[in-house]
Image (tube, rainbow, N blue to C red; front, side):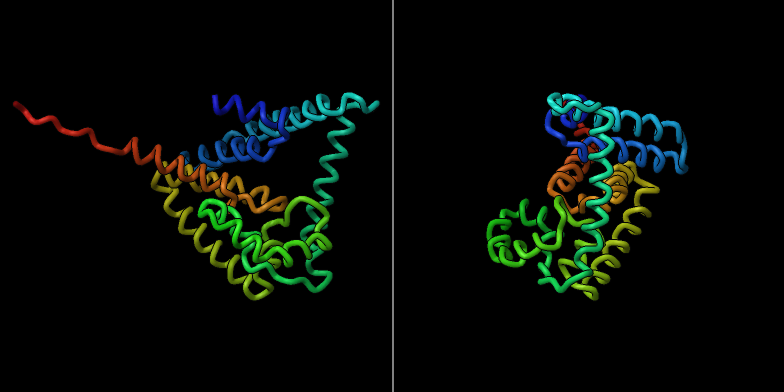
Length: 226
């Protein structure tokens, strides 16, 4: 039911990232379990499925526009690519007030119920970013710079790289860690669009994986003989 919902959401609610996360993480997890890259034809099938749903979304939501759904979908995709490139370089073109983690740790703040406090505290700095963003969100490297500046951004990226390397090593020997790393790997593959691996949806997915793995690894309770 969950998988069917993820295939329907891109059409009715434009939740494309959730579907993309599902497709990419499933393939990465399968490669980690096998210990090698395999089934490259599945990538082509997944891409065709994703873009097919992308076009279907435009066909349903733009019925009044006298142009083909393929034309509208391709132009919208091109817009996203150009906008992401603009968001990646725009913060470097002018002085900005750094947001001290307001972008990177928004998911953590949401889950700890502190988002209202910190976002109100950082509101002037966050609003000033409207002048340097084309729309949407900053990609991973740009968000690190906007939050922490050049030195702090490099330190944060280095720390993330170290954590991911440790996670990858664990994924070689554990199915649970392989599933978690697949989630991270999928998020990194479209990190040029947004910092998804610090989003609350990502943390919820990891928590769900940990819960399922924990329940599946529990030993049955031994029943004492009467």
